[in-house]
Image 1 (cartoon, one colour):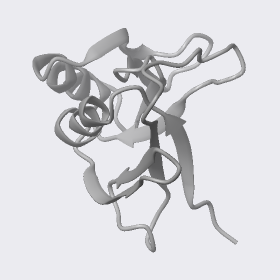
Image 2 (cartoon, one colour):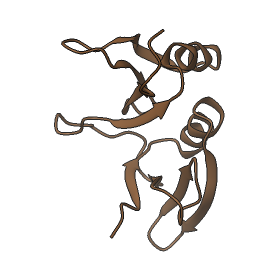
Image 3 (cartoon, helix red, strand yellow):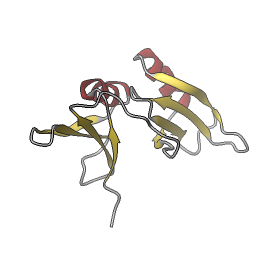
Length: 131
């Protein structure tokens, strides 16, 4: 068994694809419209689907936004340098909601950003880097 993907419902598919590909550096792996169901699925990731978990962006054509609720937490992505990644994300128009720095009650360097729909993404600096 293996983890395949995480699905997020998005209000503006083009904006979300732009964020995940141009700001986060993922690739658009595949995209398909389902006219009878009035939705589109787009899969983005750092690796091909047969090599690692990806994110499924689901766009329901008749819905422009969603209530995220209080049960959703975040997606976590390991990065080489969380400080540099935050700078890159801000330079590309991304929203950093918690700057890079050590986590409370620990020493792991983390940061939080938001995608265009408000979903939180935690950046976790690869172990061994302490700057």
